[in-house]
Image (cartoon, rainbow, N blue to C red; front, side, top):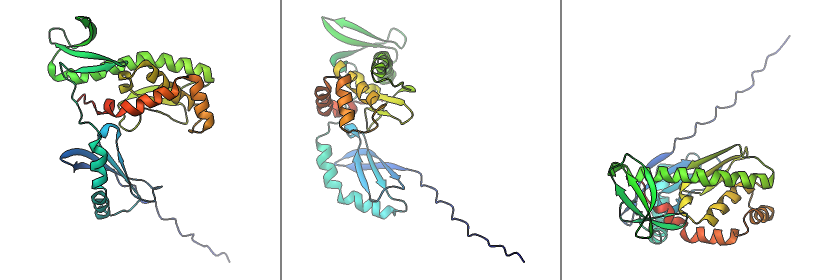
Length: 254
């Protein structure tokens, strides 16, 4: 006689909740809030995006909405203190200055030509001339910075990858709010095109930092040693980015 035993089936994994997005008000300032469930989270954590561009709460699975709201209430004072040191988001517009490779350029709008961005000198001072419809000025400037980032950063990636003997699988440019760059385990490098507003030394440091991760996927002593070999002015550049990075992230191009 043969007896069959049915093994109890494993319960299907609970689907992860989709991120919840809403607006949260801090000291009369409306900020996008993103609530993200993470299976590895043990507690609720709150983070302010670089430049004060938004808030993010990471929660363990199954946390009730009411608990999230009480967590926010408890940290409202902390948010107000931190955001008081973050400047309001200045909007790019004609007549204001936008840094390019660390040099302030006056934004000039000339609607005559069709949708181009050019660099020029007016009265001995550098300017960025934006043509076309005024409504698209911010987008045209951000697209211009993306093109400049590609032009500067791709050769730097080639230079530093040759030094470490590791190839990058791909180089991408994004408008990230929480980091300036990233390197995945399979060799994809990403950079914020906003870094083009920083001085060349800082741009070089950022590329060296991410390329170093192709060999050292950590921030240990070997990583920093390699980073400084690739970019001798690493400490200077890191200090500059710490002082000025939030202001660059705060600039609104919408």
